Image 1 (spheres, rainbow, N blue to C red):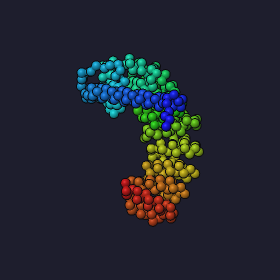
Image 2 (tube, rainbow, N blue to C red):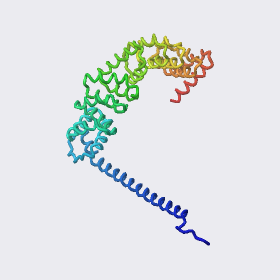
Image 3 (cartoon, rainbow, N blue to C red):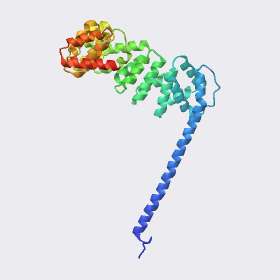
Image 4 (tube, helix red, strand yellow):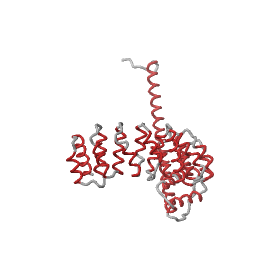
Length: 353
């Protein structure tokens, strides 16, 4: 038998391919072990840091003045993350105590550098921190950050500006709320909910003007405003509900109705051709309706659209002045089979809840 030797070109090629593959495998294995060791070391170091600083923050929240450990520059970001975690769950004096801690640590110059740095994660941390601190020295950088192409950066910058409570921040933030369509509605709404009454009033003026001018961004403003659940007269509601034929706009406006004085506007939309509008009419009557609205809900229960029938039945059985006896009378007088079935469905759901 003839055995192949390394003098054979094909054998040499196979040998070197195998050798290179083995070397690469060893190198890859070593790199994986190195990465795992680095990650483990970081985890251990982070746990030690939290174990060292978390008690300090807890004592600070309680109003004590604990002895501060040495804070190295490389640990500032980690401390700010821990600090923000507490700030996001606290209210009142506890937040002020935490603010005092950062003042004691003289972190403000580092924060201002982080605001204008190139690392997005550090910028976000700095923006959230100066917002809680109300750092007026950061105001100019925050105004610049409002125009950042990254929505997360610009939203946090707006929130921080409002926290500073400068009166002219309104002139910077509200145009961005209108113009930045990439701002998530939920984040924008939370910012509005945390804003001062003065800012909310300015925002309402903007919404009212947008309604009068029938601006294309009006729908977005209404969806933001819905989060506030304002129990007060809103003049633009009447303007929209009396003049608009846009179902989305009308539906979003109906969600803002909170007062009985606006019920006439809702009732006028009872026979709207759009099923989504009728669903919202039924929902409002369920919240604010009076005894004279019962026949209106009963009529909606005969709609050809299932969702309209369902919402009307749910609203009917949830009215505080509707008892079992009145429900029985309504059932006996129902001439529509679909309406009768959906009423039984709503009654069964209420019994289960």
